[in-house]
Length: 107
Image (cartoon, rainbow, N blue to C red; front, side, top):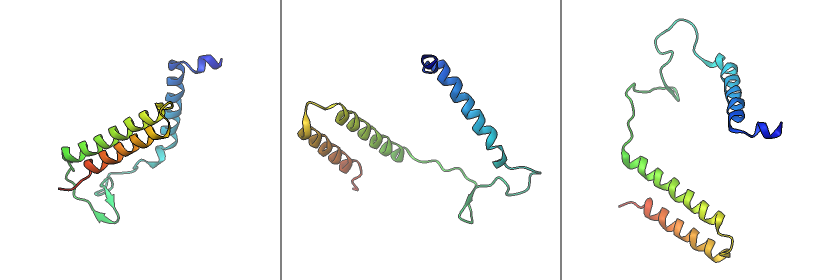
């Protein structure tokens, strides 16, 4: 039975049931009643939020994409470097710090 529970279709069905249960349990949070002005408008600390859509530029996106790429690669390298010891780990961390300084520098 334990082997069956570890197969991808069984895990998918279990997660589907858990998500369905969470959706059923949180149905009380949805807006109810007749539609009134401002009922589904965004709310931010008591101030009205302009209804326009915020469209971030690519510069913000790429900066954080590179940040997560650098951190993921560094984690992979540090996690797999067992034979290199402490010096190789310090070298990888130094390269990561240098890459983050370059990534977040202000011109």
